[in-house]
Image (cartoon, rainbow, N blue to C red):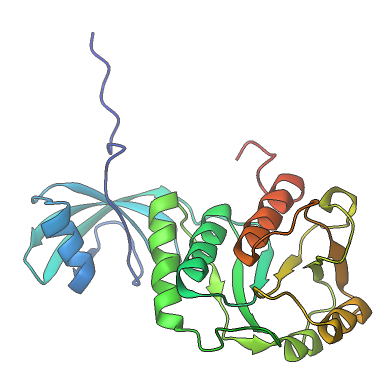
Length: 249
């Protein structure tokens, strides 16, 4: 007897929609999202798709009708509840466009709960287009299966970040000048990782960081890493030690 095919299929399109979802609700998507469903994926009425709303998890829906500019969807049932991601922030100095996009995409895939741009003395890119970063976050969540979007903070200067830092949250500072391996640090959540710009932190900034009571100096191996590599390497180490990589999730 042939096996019953999985439903919905693994190839089912997945889409973020910024409106509450519930059984038997109707949703309308417009613009680029409608274009993707109708013209790129070429969905026909009745075709399944997965929706998530950053509120209630993931839902199975079907296409009712579509045009070049909009698509009407029928929500059927909940597939997964809203996930609880580990309480890890990534605080990072913005870098050039392609590398910044890579940081946003990979940090989202790895499961961070908040992305916080930080302006340092050597930051080259001080003006960050929040809308573009938000679009990168959504696209990464659609691809990797996340049901909760990471929060995105407005860019803040390093001194201001440290001045307002929550007392209960550890700040793991990726220090090129030395530090302890992640495995030897008290890195349990709530925690945050701080990585610097392409030129590294200045001596003044390093002194400011080392003096802060929440800061733990963290080493990332014997080689000098690019800013974007350091961010992703640190997240991966933290997720393996204190996040949700070791619990069978």
